[in-house]
Amino acid sequence: MISPFALPPHPLAQAAAADLTRRVHAYMAAHPDSELHRQGKMFGVLVCSNPDCPPLCAFSAKLDGSYFHDGFVPPVYDMPNPPVGTDKTDSQRLQRLLFANYRFTNALGETKNLLDIFQHEKPILSPSAWFHKTPNHSPLTINHDPTPPAGSGDCCAPKLLQYAFSHGLQPLAMAEFWIGAPSRTEVRREGIFYQPCSGRCVPILRHMLRGLDLTPTPDQRRLADLCQRLVILYEDDALLVVDKPAGLLSVPGKSDEPSVESLLADQRPDSFLRAAHRLDQDTSGLLVIAKTPEAYTLLQSTFQRRDILKRYSALLSPNPQSSISNLQSATLIDLPLLPNPYDRPRQMVHMEHGKPALTRFLIRERRADGSILVDFFPLTGRTHQLRVHAAHPLGLDAPIVGDRLYGGKPAERLCLHAAELTFPHPTTGEMMHFISPTPPFLTHT
Image 1 (cartoon, rainbow, N blue to C red):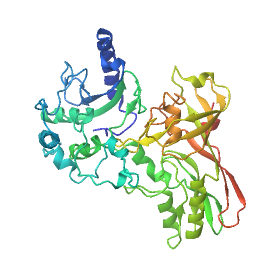
Image 2: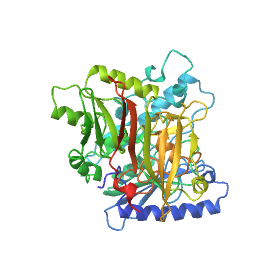
Image 3: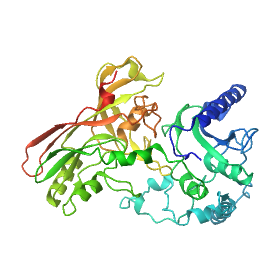
Image 4: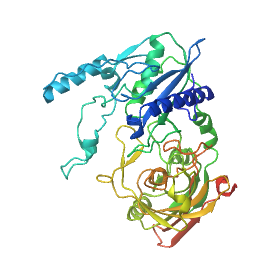
């Protein structure tokens, strides 16, 4: 089977997605009061290798108030309506009973319910927990039972695989995509393929994909090459500056994937080497590494105080209604951000509870194919700030090309590059200025 995390999906899955999109559009035309006109929904298709088996189709949760629609797989568990007048304790007991009845099978014939699947997962905070009213507590310090998040098991990928396994079908390729009006908080829009969400789906899929022979994703095949492309641009006794290739982690993560820190540590096993800041895995460009604990502390303080000038170059793919098409000069984007607790590391816009996020940008070039080359100057340093500010309808409404999380036009890489960096040296105070070698996407027309 082609991994459900592979983007873009297999052509067979893309063709099935196009067919389902036409069907859903016909449904929307016949139902002008459908929720899809106000807030779209994630849909999914699964192509199986069994002869004469049409693609399986699914939607997340309910569609217009029902779990059942012709042409779509049923829910994993037909949830009964809760009794009227239940208190909080009864509600929690009913919820655990519900989770116990959501059972998922894998290719090995093993079956687990949601409570079994999530018992060893890191607890996920509900949206309300992010806004905890006790000022001296961070939401991340709140103790929670490892209870599955609400809605687990009702997403497309688990529903499709469960139907396939329970009917003796052999999965081949899958795709999940958005149909309908854009999301008001997340960056989700029609016509874009998305990976399964990390909070609800990934733990379930980790179980369900056991026993399937998954084709390696392009990312896995590319890792070996990335390790050979890390270039040191500058070095002295206190720091070094590297040109990080897109696809390489800045610091070690949860997996065994290589990172800038780990590669340098392999080359210099007795040295102190710490990244003073971070770039997203898919972002290329300038990264500063401290070589002493003292330099690390001073550099981190510099980056936290924003005593630096950062310039990122990005190639954008505007949506038809994007206001960037009419902009001529530098503009400030002000959209507060917070992590999506159900789909880390994706971020979401939240006007009331999000942390301030400010980005100045300057249009550099409008290209014949409709793409736009811009320079970003982030005034704050939120996770995925530039990617969300570019893609969100209240931002530029122009996703970065190659952005697999926020709906950019497909490309070999995320077209976002940390191009220029100015900061005071941690020991001498001298202003350091670096410009990264230009990647191909910045010069190709």
